[in-house]
Length: 361
Image 1 (cartoon, rainbow, N blue to C red):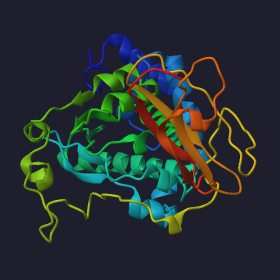
Image 2 (tube, rainbow, N blue to C red):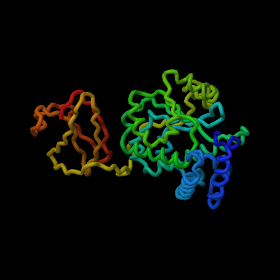
Image 3 (tube, rainbow, N blue to C red):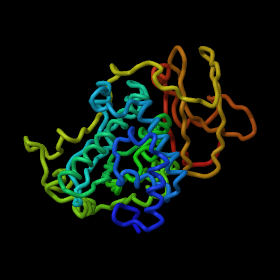
Image 4 (cartoon, rainbow, N blue to C red):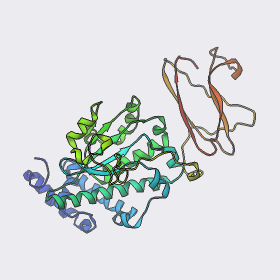
């Protein structure tokens, strides 16, 4: 049995009744007081009543703490988020569920997190979830059938190292956890299109935040992505740029009145010290001196990654390889790999990487 209204086993029906009795004291605080809604929490916990109850009670506290019930009316994201966070809801899939697009390439994670607090970004995503939840309810009324989940399309064109900046990955992980804990069964499918070679690295970073059920809903689409999208979304509900016929009223094929395409955040938006990165070490480098950190590369083509910030002024950074193992060498005695460059790390935490073509120290 599917565990949905009209398709319950005797045990599932009994669990629903018992679940309703156990959460009676918070029932009035739920955004949706139907059996359909309660069953979502039970399905998310495999009809374990105690686990579903704990999950739902935690959600009630979440809604209270963030004032989620009125977030669409009473809270507006900062201007930088409104202008530079990409994505949006556009059209419906073939079953009538809302379709949400996340446009990854133009997104400037570092610029956004240097220009708004992580809490603002987090709350923006909660707001998006509420917008989609309410749209599902409206679709249910329009179509005369229950609509509970969305189709999510990830456009990964131009996904790069800037998108796997540590604070951005951590923030996105928190958002994924929030979605799974507070909007169970809200995702029908995830379609990944235009995935570049770096995608497996990015996916492995966020994979720990996804439950097994969510992972099973992810479909990585190949070069025939336009045809695949039309399998799930009718052409008249799909923007022209994604292989459909839908446009803005003015004929724009990108449907920019519904989908935002982000962009690089101007430095005028940056807020100093808005990102708190936890670094492994804190050292003092006097003017005119240097500090060496040794990293042993064991095999060719290893990715060397660095993140650092400075306090008070800019700082030089470079990569050099020892020409003799087991002895301390000056920079002038080493092989230059990445020339020393000055970084304004006192304004923006630096994050970068280099593929080491040969082993060494």
